[in-house]
Image (cartoon, rainbow, N blue to C red; front, side, top):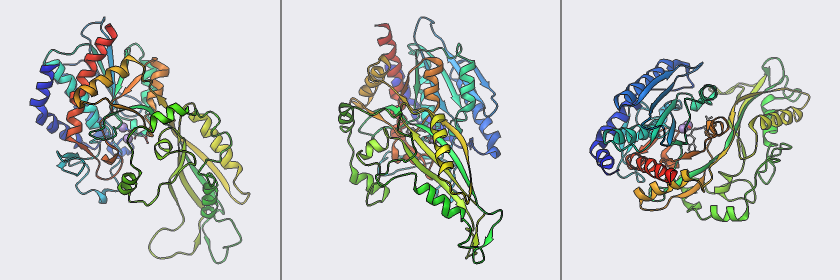
Length: 463
Ligand code: BES
Ligand code: MN
Ligand code: MN
């Protein structure tokens, strides 16, 4: 991999410029107004895959946004790495909180990124991290050092639930035949504390609507006599946690896999400072489920959170009104072996059952997905661990993450493949937030580390 590494160093400025170009296209999957930009991003990627010498480059249309596929099969006897990533991004709003426009990438330094970071929506999640793979493959191809086969599958709907990718995977099992899936769409603990993500939470997402009277009412004439849907909704939501921050939905914890004391002790070894955590968020105290540490609350325990709530009058000044309706969007992060459909059902039944007779409640399910865990006693994990050790000079720590990538569990179910989550972002990179960024150090380290994964994975598979 020596020539590959030299090529990466020589080309790094170009790699950065190319990523910046990619980040200029607003590939927001959630907003139909950006459909042509999403499609254009797929076109640009397909052209890039062709340019670097990949074969069978194809844009697969779906009922939603397209999937871009490419492969390089050098020898059918050799192992195959299937790379997954996403080129779609979250909406940029609230845009007024960006210090530079979301789709006009600029490099700025920060205390955590003294070498500079690219500021743009998608810089870290996931265009930047996905593109590290493209550049690593380019380097290996140019230098004739690709040690095994590779397939690339990059989708445009991760941020909206990957529903069409799920269909694609089910219908293209032969095309996607591989030995391991490699993904960079997660993070690591710190630039000097490399880590590999060994678990993701699942997700169940619902929208609730509470209806009281058939129209907005004068709050003087009717106040005190009819249910106020906002008062009622907030009371119902408040009752979903008890005083220990346990979720009160009957059956919610039934299938939760509890960690052994050894596993919890192992987890507690990862460096974590509650002071730094609180400082970074400018909070005086953390809060969460009794009996668990902050690290545990954010990874191995399920949660329920209101993501948005609205209703009534929120304009200038005061309007005396009892609203007819109130709404909320609620997410539940799940852990093994909670089933998202079952959890959604439990939520719906419970939420309907606690509604007073004075209102009508509807619960609308959104997308979801199962949790995923990666065992560390596998060739794939070992290869990844060796690759990080090579480029960081330190063994990476296995860490369970609280985020979700619903398609990962699907991959295992449908393709029978384990996924290695080689993420290079930091929690402080502001993914989904204003001023998302990705460190140049991280971008470079990712491109450097990936080729070693291919090398070690091929070696270990043969051994
Ligand atoms: N890349 C993230 C997930 C992630 C980020 C996992 C950091 C671990 C560490 C992904 O793009 C994402 O945002 N997923 C969504 C779920 C999806 C169904 C909208 C999430 O976790 O909220
Ligand atoms: Mn992502
Ligand atoms: Mn995301």
